[in-house]
Amino acid sequence: MKILLTVLAALCFAAVASAQDYVPNEVYRSADGAASVEDLGEGVYLFRWWPGFYVSPFVVGDDVVLAVDPVSRDVAVLYRDAVAAVTDLPITKIVYSHDHRDHIVGADVLSPDAEVIAHPGTLASLQRRSDPDIPLPQTLVDNGDTIEISGRTVGVHYFGPNHGDSNIGLTFQTGMGSMLVFVDTLEIGIVPYRTLPDTNVHGYIATLRGASQLGVDWALGGHSGPGPGIWIDNYLNYFLDMEQALIKAEAEVVQLPSDSVEDVIAQGERYTDAVIARAVDDLRPAYGQWRGFEAWAPLNAQTVRMYIITGN
Ligand SMILES: [Zn+2]
Image (cartoon, rainbow, N blue to C red; front, top):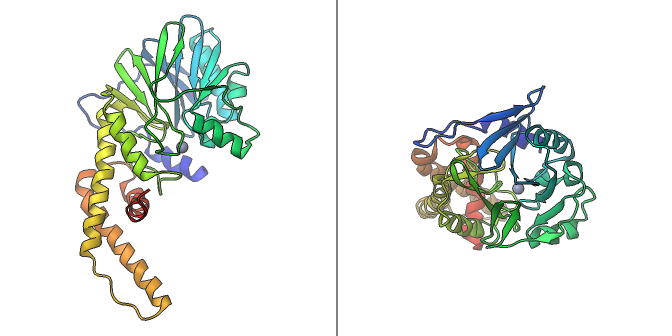
């Protein structure tokens, strides 16, 4: 986790050149600079925790507040203070984006009496794990549902397993246009994280296809953004191009014959390394400018190659 935070600290919030750059309207910054809030308009705000580079949106309705992902018990204190800095209204709903611990510990700190909302897969996962520090969701939502809070509506989208098997996309209407929040499934200007932890690659690609059809103006991840909605297609094309580059490299790299078990393993590893390196070389002209490409594209390719082999 610390490695993730450290690496993301170096990568996130990258300014990605585009015709539609996001211009932050910061309306709050904590005294120590660790937390801030940006106003996106139409009652939608972004809470950022800078030391760890996490971002969580919240919506201020006519008389209550809906917050996404408390992050951790310590961050939830900062999040609670940040919301209180822009509104006196109570947080009555908390949405878990997915079941991963690094985003959803601390709902009881953020707002002890809030209704917790999540996908059924998140509830099933939390029940299986019995995490003592994550309140269970009381309300379950799935694809096509909406969450209403006093004058505002949040859309819920689920296209099957992707980054985890319970990750929902949330759509918000902001003053800049529509925005899809897909925590950890989309990150703006950044290559997906390392070996794609807990990811179903087939489902991830299907999810990106589904998300692309939403036609949103903006996309937000759990660590970066917002950026133009084209980043959904950018991510989809990255995975499709990686799949094709791996298939091509697999056909081109010569695997030498082996005459012992040890030799089979050694030759196989050399072959795999060569396939990965060739595929990443193929991708570099189109994607080499994304943050983290040199460090993480080879690791992404390891997992995508396993998807090609297993089908999942
Ligand atoms: Zn995650």
